[in-house]
Length: 96
View 1 (cartoon, rainbow, N blue to C red):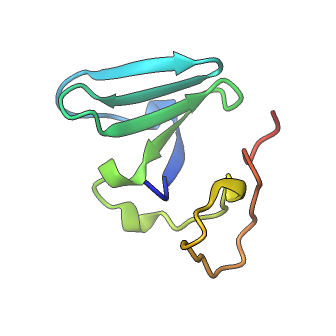
View 2: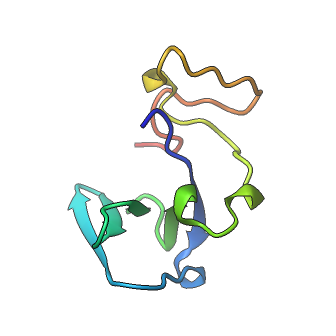
């Protein structure tokens, strides 16, 4: 997958329908996914307390959320050209 796009919301503003999500944690990061098909759903980071990032691909109206930055520019595949003037970060967009 050459691009992962998600939008952050306060945790209390997010709801999911259907089966219970499954999750795994690696350090300060917790990711959740669909227990049936394995599709990624959310991303939580201890550095962003009270926020949950939802992958645009699982949202009902993802077009409502235009990008505001590009993280992990250092890992962008050479064939992927993004022609905008948004802020770019070599790795994470928040301090680590």
